[in-house]
Length: 244
Image 1 (cartoon, rainbow, N blue to C red):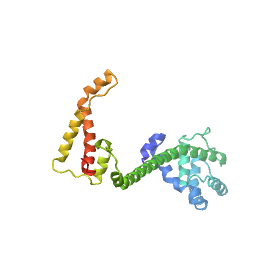
Image 2: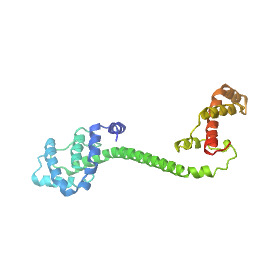
Image 3: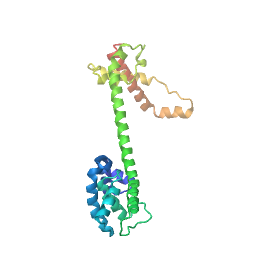
């Protein structure tokens, strides 16, 4: 996963993105509330004094239980949520805690954090989906290629073409990959020279003067391209299909 790319895409600090990604499988609903509560309490003991909140034991229990209901977060993300709140990077109108236990304010912080985090999840999931689709496409191509080579001998034996013109040009690569084409001495050169000669007899075919002029200007290139196709077909016709 390209974390710098994702951070750049969502326009957020790489460090924050790394925390979000690393903590996704450690969210409370996955690890369990019972295991999370003592860790939440420990984090709150560190965080609350920074805001002038001297939470008494009974208040700490109340806040801990309240925070534990935000099961879509991990304990580590609780720290990040308050850090982003302190940096005024969350979408909250009132950026203050007033030195007292304020569950509503804490709730706003955690909710705003979860909403902020959504764009990172979306970017990650989009990237994962692209990778999944690419892998599926690659697998389809592998299966299609495998199926083609399994059926290729039957295609050859069932070929009904009357001349090399009827041979699919892509059969040449398939025959090479299948080890069906082995040129005798001088045979490859002879086929190429024959293909060039055949291609040279093809006259330009255009509907108007401008198209004809273009073809004439590119005659050598067009002739060579046509010769390559003809040579491929001739090779399959002569060597694989044993036709004359």
